[in-house]
Image (cartoon, rainbow, N blue to C red; front, side):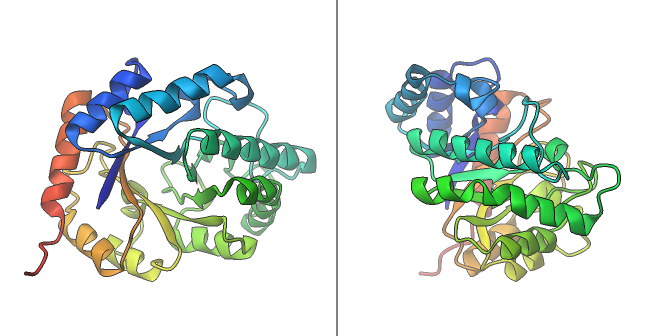
Length: 274
């Protein structure tokens, strides 16, 4: 398995310090939240882009892509009935694709529940239509950069749109582009009645990226969720992407979460037959 971690985990540490500690703990990839560079992509200078790219190289980790794409921004919305805002949002995602490529990344995780939840008067069917339209404006940039957007279903505690893996796959299939795939997150999947291994098997052909975390919002191994069957299933379905640690509750401490999450995941890897 290839392990990555989300860079906002390191809070006020410099990008270089965060990347170096991730590498020390055994991660070979990092995901970057754009807001750790600037709130808007057009405010991230060429010098900043080069600095973070060089910091990753110096630390010996790969920037695999971006997540929290619309966090800390205003004026963007995935499921709005306003056609102008949909176009603006899709084109902004295209700008993020160019940032991703400049950082040597190849994927972007599209969660951002605050910019996709159902607006008053918008039905679920309409929201899917609007979301597909929004993403259509990003497709030219995705194709040109070779960057894939991975749609992230989130549980009901975070919103009311794309609540299940099946719903995320449905939107992916509606868009019908090789540059739009599916992302699955353990915390989110745990809100479904179907066991996580069964969800993974059902969505194996669509799965492009994977977040490892616990329903308690801490790292894998810091709660009740057992990862042995999850890691076994990823192996069984031939998943070749990244297993990326994403944390929201830092109560145990950043160093512990970073180090012990990957140690636990490695212990949960299926034993290879000799």
